Amino acid sequence: MKLVINTSYGGITDESAKLRKDPQFIEDVECGRFVGREQDSWGKHIETLRVVEIPDEATDALIVNYDGIETVLYTIDGKIYMTPADIALPDVFKEI
Image (tube, rainbow, N blue to C red):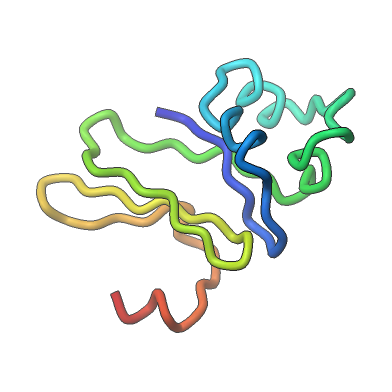
């Protein structure tokens, strides 16, 4: 499953969050097409949006938001994984 997350400080609205799984929106982010997006909260984060893919066999996916920076945690066969793995998270998450 693919979804869009924000990878920088500053959040998105709940209304905009509904788009994160929309196939057309995912394609727009992957291709850099943001015409007309300036009006919603995603448009303010164009440079920091990222499409992440969660494996189909993953279970219990959770989007963690810390001051607007979103990370996805999911499990496969009882092991916890994080995506994107290259984001520097605050110390509070390093203890998990």
